[in-house]
Length: 162
Image (cartoon, rainbow, N blue to C red; front, side, top):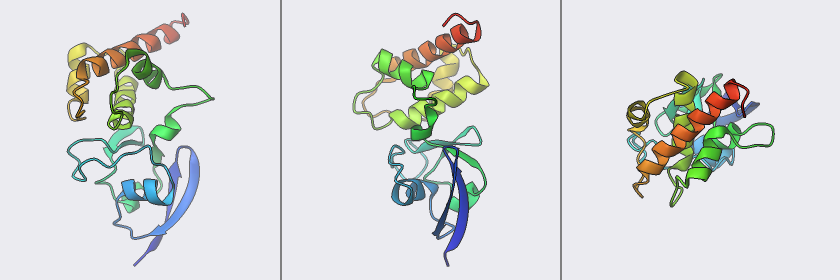
């Protein structure tokens, strides 16, 4: 039986009528047209489908749309603000931290969550935090460099040096 679910996605309120057990990933892509969130394994193992829910990284292939109701959801499309890229997006571009690009939205959102909780992580902390996000192209060194660059940019902006 379908239900109407109220969602807050990328700062906008919307409603969808759907099966309450449907994966949030499917609703984002198919109903809301937010195709930046990618389907990877469908089992929560690759984290390609990562979105932020109330500021925390979540595998959207495993979260039901009913569990997402009333919570603040951010997809890769909603990360940038005020017409500019988010510092993590800028860092990924500057470091060339992508090859095929498929894993990049989930990587960027997970990295943004890391920097919200730990604005100056060590390389070891970056690797540990990002460990579950799989990159089939094995671009891990550049991904770590991008997160490090974004952290440095955040430190500069906090000191007013940017």
